[in-house]
Structure formats: structure tokens, C-alpha cells
Amino acid sequence: MKRTPWIIAGLLLVVAIIVGMTASDTEATALSAARNTPQRSGKRVRLLVAEVEKIYAGSMVMIDSSGYATSAASVASHQVVGRAATTVDNSTGTNGELKIDVEIGVFGWANFGGVTDGNIGDICYVVDDQTVSVTNSGNGIIAGVVVDVDSSYVWVDTGERDKTAGAFTTLAVSGAATFGSTVVHTGAVTMASTLNVTGAGVFSSTLGVDGNVILGGTVTISNTLSVAGASAFTGAGVFSGNLGADGTFKAGGASVFSNTLTANGAVVASSTLGVDGNTIVGGTLTASSTVSAASGFLYGATVGKSFAITNTGVTNTMVLQFQGGICTGALFNGTQR
Image (tube, rainbow, N blue to C red):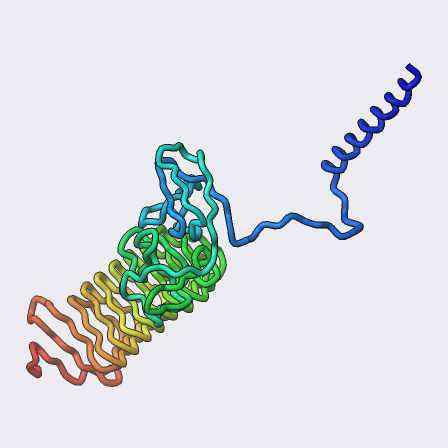
């Protein structure tokens, strides 16, 4: 019975230690000595696996709109993360029942065909969970950035595409935007100021810019491009929709328009300019090469080699030849008039 005070004192000491440990866990204190901090690789993430999904080790992995991991495929509203570290079979499970470790890095994927050394630095797209292509033939799911190509693989910086490329569903910028490489978007783009892309631009929907547009590489636009300022394209331009430019339009490479080209300012074409629809030019048209249009209206002076209008209703082909803003001759179906 005489030991009771010592037992009580011991219990109080234990309680004090526990309370102290709990307090140290909840209070923020700066280090006063070296700390052995736990570490995990920043190149590996652990994801919840989607229901009815089996992911094989070594396969390309993406996440769906809810954040669940699936095998990579050209499926809308998904984003590639990396390579599966292990095989996980959740084919009979529910969403999030199992987890999978996914590695981020440079991996060798199968070449669907067409990926060459010339595509180094470009984005590539998912074909399936082990194959990539530089051609977007589906939903535009980006695998990553091509860093090398050899006879066996396309080496892709998988899950790190934001270093050199931009992929957007909706892009709204109140100031200037500058991108060092490819820009891909599937929704509307609204810019209050300058859009400057030094690489390629792929636009699946409407692009509206209140300022200037400067694109250094190939431009592919499936819908309307509307520019309140000047437009300068040093690469090729392929437009399935309309182009409306309130300012100057400059095309340094070949440009092809499936629909109307409307430029309220000057049009300067250093290379071929082909328009399947109408051509409406409010200012001077300067062409270093041929300008052709299926139907057309031209306002202002014309300086350059030729301006061709086909299917005019009068003749199949009419070519007006200008020099210094003066029409020096006209050809109808190859006959001088």
C-alpha cells in the first residue's frame, strides 16, 4: 500500500508525456535542429481506380472527369497522368475501391505512324494505352510532349505537357497571352488583348481576340477566327470556318480558307492565299504569290502578282493581274481580255 503514491506519480507522468506529445502535434514550431523528414518521389502519384477497370503495368494511365484512373484511350474529358507501376484489376469493383501507383516521366510508347524527329517538341495524342500519334483523329487526348523518336518508340514526356504546350477547354485572358509552343483548345477562346503563339495553334471552336493575333507555326481552326486587331501568321493557316479581321491580316505561309475571308484592313500574303468562299478586303491587298477565291469582292488597291476569282457566273475562271495598284490585264479561262 505504501507504493500507491509512486504509482500515482508514474501515471501522472505518463499522462503529462502524452499531453505534451499531442500538443506538439497540433502546434506549429520552427526547427531548432536537423529533421529526418519522410520522403516520397514527386514522379509518382497514387490514384483511385475507376469501376469495372483493369489497368496493366506499363500502360498509359489517364483520369476521368471525376479523378478516377483508367487505361488511356481517346475518350473525351480525360487527362493523361503517366505510366502504371503495377497491374490493378478493379473489373468487379466500384469507383475508388482500389488504388494504383502511376509514374510520371519520359516513356517509350508505340508509334502509330507519322511521328518523326521533326515532331520533337510537339504534343502527341493518345491512340490507346500504349500508342501515340501526332494526328488528332479522335477526342484530342494529349499524351504529352515528344522528346525523341527512334526505330522502336516515341519517347514522350508523359504527364508533363504544360512545360511546352497548352491545352485548354476554355481560355479567357484579359491581358496578353504568350505561349512558347503548341496551343490546343476545344472550346471558346476569348482574349481581351494580344494572343502570341510561337508554335502551332489548333483551335476546335471559335477564337475571339480583341487585340492582335500572332501565330508562328501552323494554325488549324475548325470554326470562326475573329480578330479586332492585326493578324500575323508566319506559318501555314488552315481555316474550316470564317476569318474576320478588323485590322491588318498578314500571311507569311500558305493559307487556305474553306469559307469567307473578311479583312477590313490590309491583306498581305507572302505566300499562296486560297479561299473557297468570298474574299472581302477593306484595304490594300499585297500578294507576293497567287491569291485565289471561289467568289470574291475586292475593295481598295491591289499590289502583287494576281488575284483569281473562279465561278463568277460570267466565266469559270477570271484572273486579274495588278502592278502597282493598276490592273494591267485580265484572263478569262486563260484568254487575254
